[in-house]
Length: 112
Picture (cartoon, rainbow, N blue to C red):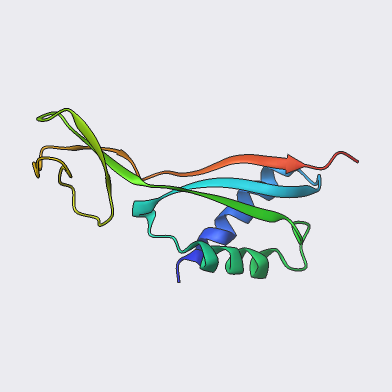
């Protein structure tokens, strides 16, 4: 369950950026190929932040599908499985467009 270490890393970065200010929500964007289980990450987040300055802070997860672009047929398709082939022509000369992201998008800092 690598979600626990991911939650720890997010909490560390959020705490650094918040610099002691209260945070009500953290929005992240996670690509399909990162193989993160959202429920496991949310559970881990709750465990990691319990008893800290981030306790009660919501973790908002946007899942990004994996897409590839095929120059051969000039089509961009969404992948359901981690096999890099064009969903239109079956070609393997494709470029991964989305699906590798792992980004903290925003923090909702509470003004006191």
